[in-house]
Structure formats: structure tokens, C-alpha cells
Image (cartoon, rainbow, N blue to C red):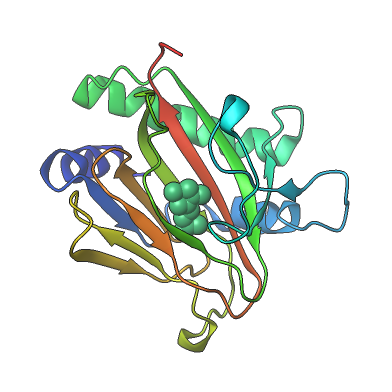
Length: 197
Ligand code: OGA
Ligand code: MN
């Protein structure tokens, strides 16, 4: 990953879309891991946290699985993100403290309504990353990530979830939405956090 370039873009525009920051072998392994054939791993995503945490299919209908540092593929991805965390802290003094991430699978007809990644009353999510794992994604498959400027009124970027693409953005500055997917849509969504909750 070109951490200097990422840092520069985050400083200037607050987000960056990278065409293929990870090596092919890792992407292929992550793709294999992002399958819910083991029903014990993936579960319905929930909205909110703590007692407010609930499953609201109308807002968000994907299934997720948090990465497991005990799995060698997951660990290889976490190592890349740790390198990014340290590099960004050195370049931008962000004080990123840790990183949490999950695989997500959206089935046909699934999406995620416009939202902010900063949980209500919490400031701990600073930087969002989403890595896409979809070979041969077609325009007719939908499932684009639509990124809005801070007020949520105008669109600043529309990202196709094509294999290997990664978007990184300041969590607080960009409301975003996943348009309805017409095909199985695989990704890893993650958040660098500062400490404090
Ligand atoms: C999320 C999210 C975007 C995407 O999981 O919070 O916004 O493109 N994901 O999958
Ligand atoms: Mn989000």
C-alpha cells in the first residue's frame, strides 16, 4: 500500500479509492473466507450498539463475520491494516488505536440505507475502510457504495464493489449508502478507532 499517498488524500479530501492495494494471493484467500457456507460463522448484521442494538432488515440486510486473528488469512489482512494504522499515525498524528473489521455478504435485494459510521454518542470510529471481493461485477449488479458530503445532500463518489478495490474515508465526514445489490456482494468493512470507549 502506498501509505504516503493515502495519507495525502485523507488530509486533502478525506477519502481515497484504491484500485488494488493488496496482492492477488491475499485477495483470493479473503474471497474464499468471505463465504457463509459454515452457518456458525456469519450472522445477521445489527444496527446500533449495546442495548440499542437491533436487527432492522429495512436499514441493513447483510450477514457479517468478524475477522479472527487466529485464522491465517484473516491475520494476513490484519497485518496489512496494522501497517496502514502505524503509517497513518506517523503521517497524520491520528492516534488510531485499533482496527475492527468484518466480512459482509449482501444477497440479492440487500442494501444498507444512508448512515454514518460514527455510532451515536461515540467518537471512537475515525477511519472507515471497505475492501470489495467481487469478480466480474457488472453495472446491472447494482450494490454501489454512494458517498455523500458531510451534510448528506450531494453525492461525492459512487464506488463499484469490484474485486480488490478499497475505499478509505474519514468516518465522521461522509454519510454513505449501499444501493440494493442484485447479486451476491462480498466485502470487508473495517474501522480504525481511537481509544475512549
Ligand atoms: C458499513 C458500510 C459499505 C459497503 O458496513 O458500514 O457502510 O460498501 N459498508 O459495503
Ligand atoms: Mn457504513
